[in-house]
Length: 141
Image (cartoon, rainbow, N blue to C red; front, side, top):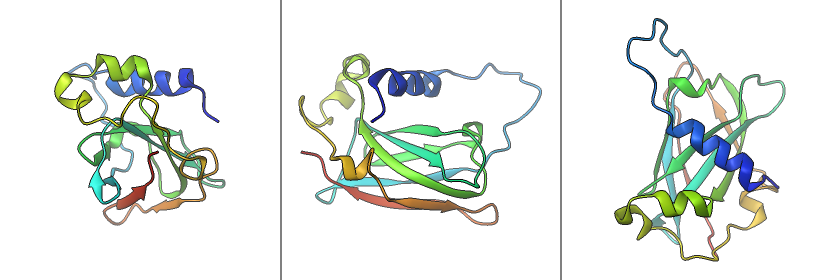
């Protein structure tokens, strides 16, 4: 199971804004999609893509708000297969979110079952020659 600290570190990495004027542009693939629970868009969820060997590259995380997520070129994703995992936004980040978003988060004490996180068998194959978009239905208890 991924520790809160690992998720927190990943979320902090997502929240860092790139400095304008960088000389090189990110060249990773982009990937977008939606996440619902009981057919309704979710907020306050983290989606993680873990490369499945022989796919190389970093693990990438993105925040899900209003049922949408996006991995930009800066995530460093490459073509290949990735295990898809979902977790709830850690409490320290839930509290830091704007009230408008917090009101959409699952109630305190909610959990995402292991079959969507540490025991996920969901694989997403990203391709370099097409748009990478996927929709997911998860359970939040």
